[in-house]
Image (cartoon, rainbow, N blue to C red; front, side):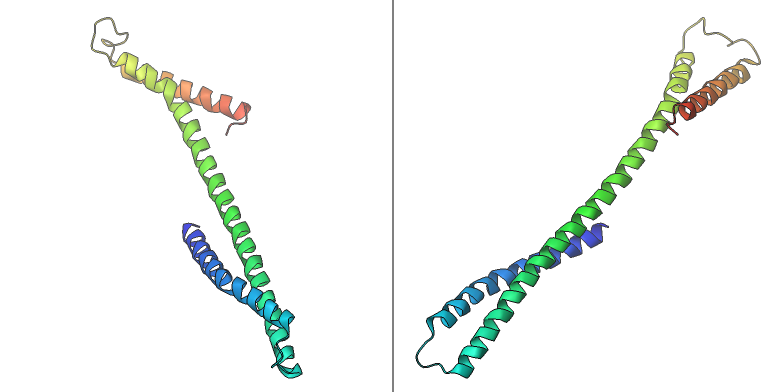
Length: 148
């Protein structure tokens, strides 16, 4: 979508340049047709009027295209924003799952005496089971709260 937004921006800038060029041309042609110079004949006046009308239509078409490109650009930005919000949501859920077990493992990982189950051969297995239960409870709770 970034490439599409860049392409849309480039086209919009080109349209702006063309409009800046044709806008004064349109005004000059309109003034010329209104002044009705004495040296011009009916055929010339018709052509000048037709050229003025065509220039007006082109300027209006450029404005319309710029507006459409702006709308497409806004839609692309909304899609990107929605994707980013979804990604941030899942990162938050994952961080929420790992926060309690990170706290427990950090607390048990300190190098001081009195840490429970350090002498037991089943200490690691017991802590692993407790962490699995905590994680399963969090997943159940998140599903119940409809977070996942």
